[in-house]
Length: 294
Image (cartoon, rainbow, N blue to C red; front, side, top):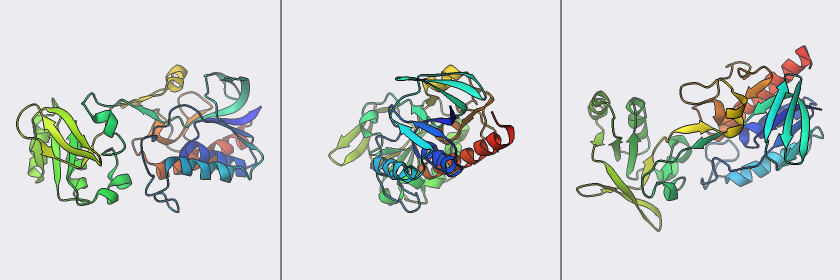
């Protein structure tokens, strides 16, 4: 019997395990499968670890957990979860374990856009967060794929890092959004994208279906996201963006005893924020176990 089984061993899951381990809880972290930031070369903005590789950040986290005998980390996938609060049955490749609580730190799946060259440049020249990657690419030629009203905030924000920002209007972008971007002093390109032109150093230009290409070094885009299969199978309540709905204070989901932290339950997706959310979830789960017991 584990107090908590954590699905996902990224910053959120490892941080939650650290908090729970220090509270003398018996914890199992299950970490396997594709990592959402696998394409990223570095993690930035993480205090004391700025510029670390994603793998090194995880290794540091696991090393910290080694001091706590109640915490176990396995390189296995969670195949399924059944049962109820106090007695969840967690299916693993080597068998089944029982847990009083479940914490989902599974991240999300990014559905990369069907633009020629997009997948190859994802994480190298195509990013989602300027706070994570903007400093290293400051003053370069940036473009941003505008897919909805959120571009009215995101476009002007990018000018904190460079004066060279072009907004690429996605098909169907409302005319008032286009007008708002232009009113903000941003260049808007409405020609359909044909492909992304890459060179040895990454993105070099954006080619359109007609006319000259746009020289470009960096593209910001927010592809659609979906939860992993484990989350879908649990039937948790999701919001309109496909994120797990979790209580803002306790991080408990619509299924009693199942909690969520990190990218799977927020649009504020960055390693440091995920680690903070994991620590918060670990503390609230420990409090629930202390007060409510099984």
